[in-house]
Image (cartoon, rainbow, N blue to C red; front, top):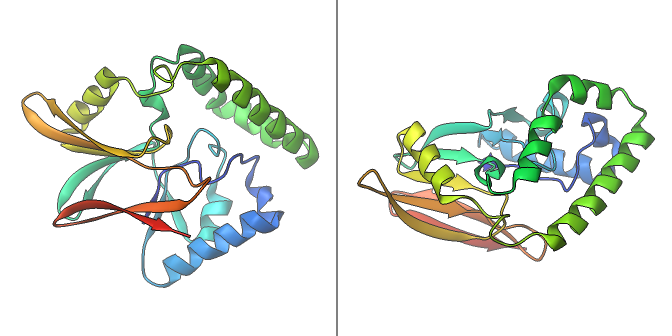
Length: 205
């Protein structure tokens, strides 16, 4: 099972495991891992501070931002997907700034209550900014998608972030490719399952 980021709306450090919901999520993931299903986790733009303490509590393995895995016999590139939204220049600048390890370490040294307040402020600010951005800017750039598939030498990409669930067909360097986009879980949960016949979305909850 692969979780491709934004498991939480905000993550202010692994001591957030003290919160009941966070602890419940970790325990649920650990139960999946204990059943014999390996769990891999790629962080997203909202929970990029998820660390090894959470991964251990969840029985999960933290994965790099981009990874090619064998999914039902097909090499598949998996990622959160925010780096594909290259048209949103302001966000990409913030992404580079916020992923600086030194800044992250300094933030994690702040008292929990301070980090919690900063996290809530950041979520409100993000909501306001999204309301003023065009849908096109917040979606992936076709050229970035093609470059990712080309660099990974695969014909399938699965990502989240944009919350526009769909299966897109495209041709890259003469190869038929597909891009699967995960849905969000605000109204109803869902997941993608792949086997030798291909992929399909399942609703849960």
